[in-house]
Each structure stands twice: as structure tokens, then as C-alpha cells.
Image (cartoon, rainbow, N blue to C red; front, top):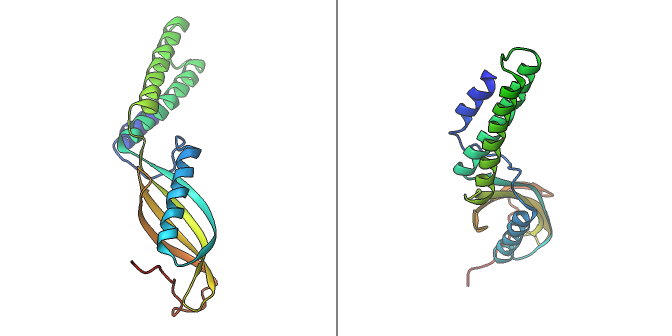
Amino acid sequence: MKLALASLIFFSGFGLYRSSPMATSKDQELTEKSVLEWADKTFEFYDGPRFEKFQMIPSNEYFKIETQVEGLKEYKEELKAGFQAGEIKKTKEEFDAQLKKLDRKIDSLTVVMNSSINKAMGFEIDFWANIMVNNGLTVYYVHHMKLDAKYAVQEGKVTGSIGKENDKIHIIYKKAK
């Protein structure tokens, strides 16, 4: 019980990057669409795009509330276990009232979490594609893409490749018009 409360207090102030369960398929669809638009403007030629490791980066507000909800759920389970083990000296009615109060708080925080705050600080996804290089062939590159909360690409960084023969091989980018 003390561990759950300590975790709740400790982690409620830190916006750690992790995938959030609130990211929707619509978020992923809009993220992928933006990355493809970026690729169309960036590369002279690419083919066979695919995506991996989609993540919503939760906003600090969302993360705090999400962490509170998870901590309260863990606390509730620990209370139940303590009551069943006889460690909590309350009547069944007092204990049920305490659980109902916790459930109301969890429900209220969930409503706030799902409706009234900005959920995402941004999105990340890995973008794979066969991209034309200076020798006229294509190399299978992966770019780690970072987008803001409005799905605008902020950064695309090459994080790997398959088929790149040497360091003289480089991507052919579109020329600015």
C-alpha cells in the first residue's frame, strides 16, 4: 500500500515518454499521413513505405492524471487484499463506502483525462522506405520521426538502413524550388 502511494507521488511530477493507451488509430492514421506528405516533399523517389513503433507522447497534464488513476487503482487493489487478510479493521459497510469513494474519484479523474485536457505533446513513429540514393539504386532506410501535437513533422532522423554499401552512398533529396 505504501509503495503504490509513494509511486503515485513520485511519478506524478515527471512526464516520462512512453506509449499511452489513449492514442487512437485516428492519431496513428494522421501521423502516417503527415509523414508520407513529408516524404513526398523530401525525397526525389521513395517506394514501399511502412510504419512501426507508433507512440503518443502524453502531455504533462495528461500523464499526471493518468498516473494518478493508475495509482488509485493499485491502491484500491491493495486495500481489498488488506481487508481480506484482516489487516484493515473496518466493518464491511465502512470498507465498501471507502471503495465507493475511491471509485468516484477514479471515475471523475478518468472523465477529466478523456475530455478536457490536451492528451498529446506529440507523436513518434519509425518510417521505413526504399529511398533512391546517388548510385541510382534504392536503399531501405528507417527514419525515426517526431511530430508535434498537431501532426506536423518536427524531425526525421535516419536511424538505420539495409543495403547501404558504403559511406559514399547518400539519399537523393528534392531540390528546393
